Length: 66
Image (cartoon, rainbow, N blue to C red):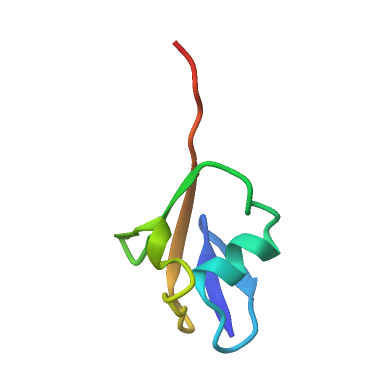
């Protein structure tokens, strides 16, 4: 299936979850926020949030500083 990740088309296996996407992108250890179709997905729900064809996903990396 195809989704849009940060504006780019990406192919994923059918039934993939937000957590699967994060692992595929090598971001599992990163501090980040994820939106699917403009709705924030809590980190506790990544594994329980399936993606569907055409979903628009935005991954935002948290950056520390002062």
